[in-house]
Figure 1 (spheres, rainbow, N blue to C red):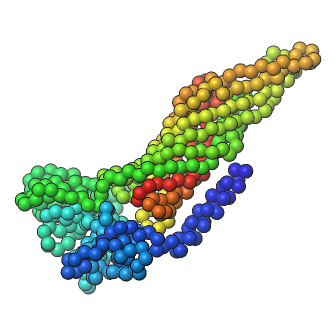
Figure 2 (figure 1 turned 180 degrees about the vertical axis):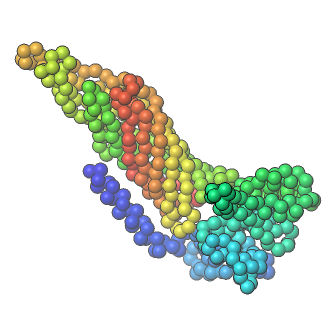
Figure 3 (figure 1 turned 90 degrees about the horizontal axis):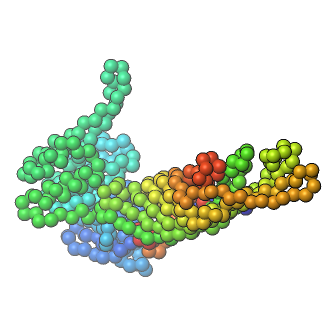
Length: 422
């Protein structure tokens, strides 16, 4: 039965990936475009991966209207109604978006760059063909300049070591010379989005004529969701010898929160869930009765683990494509709702071999369990939110109070979830 669920889940994943081209035009969200003359037009923007967003804007006035494609030379800017804003920016002469980073070019290239901070100093980013995030800035209406951090491998005393240099620190120090309070922030700064946003916001708050600054693209988002599916577990009982037990396929369901903190890279998120599930383990095995070795003891383990589980996971989602794969890892806490549902029923032969006696004893179970969890899945835009299909594995520590008597459950789950918002 459980193999049928694995086959079904694999089929659904393949179907979703195969359906990607057919759904390519269905990821429109409320937004706007700004034409070269400065006038704005509201409508819907087709949201894709960061690379495509930097090269092309696909716009329609409403759900029934035809789509129009704009290149960076045809618009001043575009953006989402509540989300990222992209401005047409000309790369510094001599730079292109060639894989592997900067390369020589005979003429500058114009791209839609995502605006991370606006104010007297503006911070931008885009993702190049190699999947690398690159950062640019400009002050007032000056030219766009790239900020770079160089990492290279060098040989020192016949040992290959990684060496870093930070040209962007000097570039920003010179550009922000009129704001002394921002200078200490640059001394040990790394080329990370969260640190750059903090530096630019601090500069804009102290620059003459600036009363506030807005980090337009990076706001903390919280998405509520529901999740349901099936799960099956295995455990090991030590009762004068090892006994492998398996719980059949049973339902699991609950609620979830998906958090996209503003300080995180946009590909990272935190996932916390509250899940209910019940696992039923039963197995028959033979032992000696412990008194007279030639008398048999037939034993039946009957174990019900009714738990509420709270996994906390860090999720990494691939940024490109309408159907986006993700992976997540984390830790899980389990609370046992009934600690008196783990029994071993013994049927022992009487002395002389005539008749039997039946007794039962309880396995003392722990009220709480802890363990690790990991998952692979895909996200699919659907209505005002997104569907997720996921395969998950988790391993808890010991289920019994006595060490090694009843091992922690190993669980495989196949889950379908829905998250509100994007």
